[in-house]
Image 1: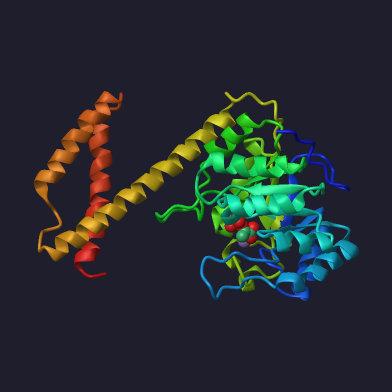
Image 2 (image 1 turned 180 degrees about the vertical axis):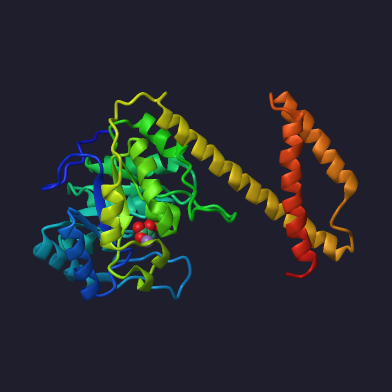
Length: 354
Ligand code: PEP
Ligand code: MN
């Protein structure tokens, strides 16, 4: 890929590059109030969604063109650069007409090569910096394909945004980080800056700080964080937005480590442990979901919750399998007794019709 450094005028070239602002541009007052606070705290690039891809109709789908003059106003009054999401040729044309400085392609759009190609064709001949979010599905090739489409259209200031990947199962995060995917992207295209979007990964504001730190420890180039002057009353993604004040706290508490740090360092190993623990939790939650399905089946067929033979079989087999993987059989039994007791508790709730 033929890339140039992701330089933005007036923005210092250092980690992390921070892009912050509300999920959506709701009203002129909300945009200006949020932007002024962010600028006061040192933000240099302001984000706001003008066109919002919502999962279901009826949600707030953005103000569209009407909100673009507000972005111009932000630029004029605060000096910040502005960034917004584009999903169609029309969005690109309108955004450029109003001088939006940085464009990004959203996760749903990246998953659609027709849409990405349409955007790429419209951008031909410009040199706007573009950030491409990972597709909603964990498909690295599709992500790289989108980057290539833009690069083939002559866009050289390109970056990637890691915003996590959707899953069906209920989980801690709104979108699973699956850190190995952006890490592999970095291995494949080392000169491509990768920015983390902890807001859309977390879906909850209390998880944002630790995700920012993880992204920094993984040597991400920047962060794009949703920040709103009144997050609880936001028209979209209310639970994951933080006030500009909280954003400042989060950023000030970040520890930015030397990127030359050895990968064998304790930090890296601990990060791997955190990631493995998260996937253990997710696997456990998936197992519980299936147990609840079995519970429903047992209820419909008048079977008892506890099926002793099956329980014995699981305990013995897992002890043996664990030993084959260099773990103590007794330890495996303790683990599976605990898991089984939680499954029984969840099935009992189904039996009782709760
Ligand atoms: C957003 O940034 O507000 C957004 C819609 O994100 P994503 O495309 O990651 O869902
Ligand atoms: Mn959002």
